[in-house]
Image 1 (spheres, helix red, strand yellow):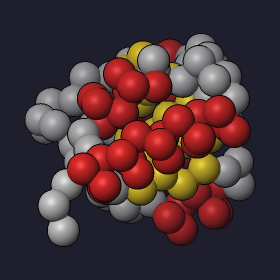
Image 2 (tube, one colour):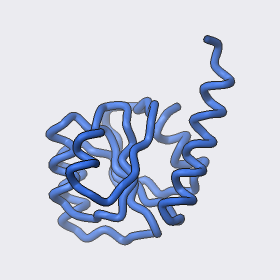
Image 3 (tube, helix red, strand yellow):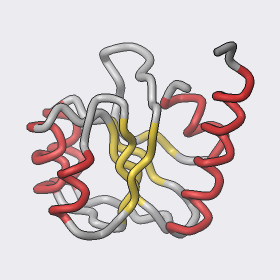
Length: 118
């Protein structure tokens, strides 16, 4: 499923432009421990977190991560927005908490998998 489709289904706002075209997302990893998030970063993983730091975005980009979804309608600061734009990491904001965000993302990805031929 594309990141744009997930954002639309979630009602999330994408804050940084995606210059690389549609990004395929195959899984979501959610958490608030930097080490756990970085361990699961990949080009097809959406990182969902309450950590709104430029350091997280820079580290995700170093590991070829694709996108970060901030939770609870967090308003990111200018340093975080700059870091995401400079690294090419898509930054989006969900209006929901972690539980609700993950549940909705799970439903979207599950429907996508069941609809696609095996």
